[in-house]
Every structure is written in structure tokens, then in C-alpha cells.
Length: 294
Ligand SMILES: [Zn+2]
Image (cartoon, rainbow, N blue to C red; front, side, top):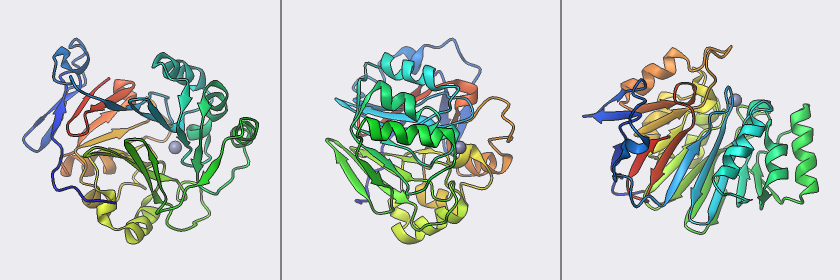
């Protein structure tokens, strides 16, 4: 993977937040300002990452001219809303669906998605789960005859202007979270890292195998809903993101995101956007600059 000499500039819209110097300040209460500040600052955006509000789960999509990549499909409970939201974007074909690991909060809606859209390929780790969500997903994968690619660190896929690199798992841990697929999506000079529910032990193995530069990104979807068991110092130091998104449910039973993770993000001066507070979060880009809104 190439290293970039120039970090893209970051523009945060009025609705969500602003960056003052190196410190990010969240203005979550400001709801009256229209999307992306209502100005023309995001004119020229040609792609976007959309982090859907699926409650306590994960589902995100990267969209660009003619292309769509899904990363996880949320929960059973959120599946209808997720399909509606994707349909509302005018999508009927998905180039590739990454199912990071077979837990219900990530693949609960996979069967719905596979039935609702033409999914051209599935990337997922070579792990199984003894759950209805998993069996239902696999049944749809077979019925729809989706080609399945094993997620393994070092895998690289190109979809037109977009490159998707698999950075983890670097080895087999035999535990679903640790074996999460971690993927980097690159568009122009801008890169988006999706950590699944990867935890520290697997982060370190992946950094060891792939090298720090492979994790260098602009936007990170924080691992495991902000649990303290993920997002090591080592990972953040390698990734150096400007923007972090945490996908979690309001008042969830796990206490996600954990205080330890929030403190680390603050120490690193990373602007944080949470789906439990903001709903669906969208990051638009033209391949050089990113704008955050919803
Ligand atoms: Zn999860």
C-alpha cells in the first residue's frame, strides 16, 4: 500500500463539530444547522462513507460514482430500516459486502441485505457461528450464489476508483472478535479504516504483519463499539486518524463506548462522532478533503 505524502485537509460541518487547533470539540446539541453546514463547502464531494445508526451494532457503506461497498449489516432488529435506508440512496447493486465477523450485531441484517440487493461478492473471515443469524446469512449466500472471499491480512481488491485492503486477521485466533476482518478503503488521497470488533491482541498481530503505514488513515470506525478491549495506543499511533466514528446503541448494556477509549481519542486530538448521539453519520469526500455531517 502506498504511503501518502500529503494528509488531506479536514473540514467539519457546522452540524456536528469543529476542529479548533488540534483539539476536537463536539457540538452535538446543535441541531438547527442544516446538513453539512448548509453552505457549499462540500460541493464537489464524489464519494461518502455512511455509518448507519443500527442501535448496538455495526453497518456502514462506502459509496462512490457507480459503486457501493457494505461493511456489516447491523442487527436483526435494525434490518428493515437498514434496507430502507440503502434503498433510499438509490442502490440496487452492492459491489462487495464485508461481513467482519459472524456476531448478530454485525450480520443480523445480512440475510435481508443479500435478498434485497444484488451483492456481487462477500468478504468474510473463515470463521463460523452456531446462530440463526449465521445460518440464515449462509443460506442466502448460497441461494444468491455470491462468491465468497476469505478475509486475510494482505488481501487487496479493486473496485474502479476504490481499493479495499484487508489488514486483519493476520492469524487465526479462534475467537470471533479477534478474527474480525479489518479493512481499509482508499479513495484518492483519503482512507477509511473499518475495525469491526477487532481487539488489541489482534490489532498488535496485524500491525506486526502489515506494518504501521498500512493503518495510516483519515477516518477510523473504532473497534468493538468503543470497548476498552480495542483501540490500543499502538493502533492509534499507527493510524493517526483525524476523525473517529463509534457505532453503538443509546444506553447499551455494555457501557459502550468505554471511558478508556474516549480518553485515548481525546488525548490524540481525534474528532469523535457517535451514532448513539447523532444517528447516521456521513463523511463525504472528493478524494482530498473530508466533510462530516449526517
Ligand atoms: Zn459488535
